[in-house]
Length: 325
Image (cartoon, rainbow, N blue to C red; front, side, top):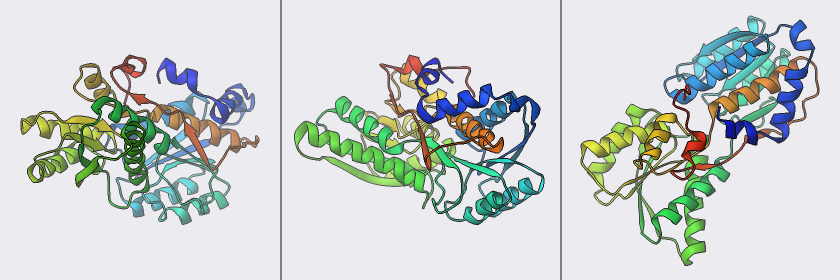
């Protein structure tokens, strides 16, 4: 986590973290923290898992981790198994917004304090809070950067999305596209943006590569790639280089992956938005442990981490080559 992020952590998350760290009960009451990840095939998810583990261990707690490998049925079984093994806190990145509702409700009914991270879960589910970055706020910032950078140029966007039906992906693309349109309206009084094609990259570098290869064949006038995370855009960049296509600006709706930030420093990648997995995961653990200790946790249904667009002008504030992610 960067020095900047530590400084900007505020409000609910800061208060919860301070209370947990100061609590004398932490030393006396060792509790089990279960971490259920929907997948670990991209650096973001691996970093979130490692950060959640590290924070729980810092607090002196026992940690059990489960990887659903992208399968909703396995994640349901994982959650049931974690509850059987006596966890008191569940940190979960759900594979499906509706499919995990019953499993989460069963965990809560068993006395487990559930905190959702990153992916959206149906708000009808009984959990403490969802910790994530604000896709709307990040999208507005990224959209403004795009228009400030590309000016009045008509935008021909190749959109690379994570997976069909994923609500977080939709929020991310909608956030950036809305941000672009609002910025264009403010600048010129009209909108000049076209999504020339959409590919599905399954959130991974390799998926982004394959999706971009198809988009490049089908569209000759692309001047911008918008990906719903950095991993897919990094893959898209490799496809663009292999095809020797020029003049394409690379933009991600979220994450701040260190490989993307390194390219931003070099002027080879336009911008991304801050979605720090370490901050998300550590905040979630703090909230869950505090609740498991019987301390009052007054949090909204969604707890947002700070928003920012990362570009060449500020990338040094965020870039850490030694970070997991």
